[in-house]
Image (cartoon, rainbow, N blue to C red; front, side, top):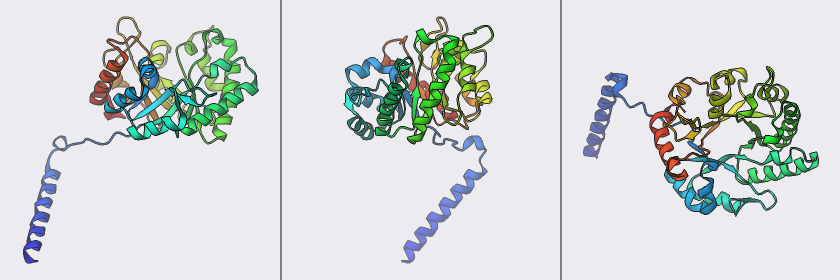
Length: 303
């Protein structure tokens, strides 16, 4: 017993000395690594070709690359299918791979001119699909080109409020995702202002696509966040080709994300998703590989 106590005492002294020594070191000499606040997310639209061919194999690669969270697209509400799998089966696949899905892009634009009953029924399907995957948000992802007129933004805002009320009542959040057309100047007016001013912030949150903000808006991502504090609960992070302005892999483009992410207000942020809609240097899977590597090395420390 005496020998054991001696060993324990020596171990304690040794550990105490190490702690004391570390405390005397300059801050730069002590590891400041910390667990990221947010999961590294991926919008699956980026690898839509791979998901169409081999969803299970693609998701295994996604998880192996370090992505932890997903945003889905393309839900078949009539059949209750994600990528050909029943919702419960797809959820089990995510669980087995240690992945979560926190948001989904759903085809609300297809119902823009349909009856309110049809929109309500579709929204119910989206809610059912979102709940099956334990999502936090249902997201309106875009507006078809034929509806992108200034006159349509006010009825769009009305639809967003109604859907938001329905989704919130079901215990989920609802968000609107921007592209570039919302920032088109119509004699001094832009559609995005109408959306923001005519929707209820408690019902309709915002998913900021930083690429499109940089591509089309006169204001920066940080400036938009300051105008609507508490509303930008999700971000899409993707880079811009230096020559064409098209999409590109993270780190290859012209958007200075180190500057943006090191200074931006993240108080309202809940989830972010890396995305690349096309213009792949090689193929979509290689692009998410390259983007993940760059993001983890240079940007994840800010989030």
